[in-house]
Image (cartoon, rainbow, N blue to C red; front, side, top):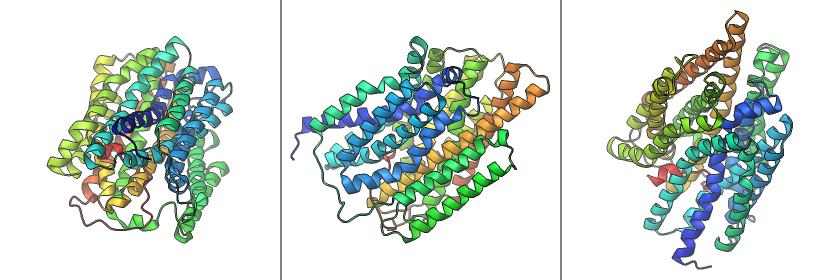
Length: 487
């Protein structure tokens, strides 16, 4: 099917609308967490599952989503992912129990993984000419970066003026419109089902492994860190990870070719992704709770509070980051960005009970947006610098997964330790707000250590000079490289 220029760009905008819905949903929930907690009776520790259920299935099935698209066709999988995400959003919006909300969030994550994995492939297929592709990737990357800003603001407006259910129900008309317009604008494509096999076992075992690990960490305080439950779940997680590695070494079409991990920059970039995401996701979670539960901000005020950070992050990721990489290479901006994030989190770790947004929070948020905007794109570029161009999607998909899994595990650790500190302070006679703030101090400080560790890993282990790309096999496009390629 031959497409004219106008149709191509209309199709791009529809794809971006679908991707925006996925990106937005990762941040829109943070603002509504206190309202969800109060309405459905979550504890502060179990509340992390509203975020983690989404992160785990999104990260766990990101690579499988790309493989499904290669086998069955990218348009077909994009439509299936949007449809599943929209139906799960309806389930979230109608949820009247903890189990229903967490379950629907997990399904949302799977639908989001499929959309994110195949969306970039559709954009690249729509624009084969290098000049048009560069412009299209710029639009795609801007949407991916700007979605966080829209999410925190929209989350605040909907939660404040209506209620938290609407942060999910707003996806319904958008999802329906995207599906209808995709049928009209996107050309149908054929997959490669006859020549490819699906590594479902690999996706299931690695996702189950991380779910067991996160569940053990989230419930470690309540069950006891040396209890049979905690140790048993951690042992099961390790066993499942071993099974995953065994599967990947034997199947004909592995989800992740293990040869990829013989490449130094790929391994280092994944380590940096895990550490930096562990800090960032925990900070979004803890700072939203601090603003509402300690400072008494309304959901709308929380949304507005995050806007400067999100705007700076988006602007830097699309402009300044690329210029710095072109001038200095990958390593200096990556290390500098991670260090700026660490400094910002140390500023958060000193916020008082009667804190002022302008004095105690805004400087840290500005530094955080600047550091993340400068430092995150080079992580993706580092992951792709050791592989052949046709395998850049695979490398970026793996580091995307590392970001998601690092975020889920980091959030579980930080939420658990913050709760433990709050309980300890309460038992020693501190007031409720002082105890909460003390718990958030622990979360912010540990998040700063994660970011500092990411900077150290990048500075000491990342290979600065790009070597000849290596071929590792299985080079399907599976991850979102929009932010990196847009620069």
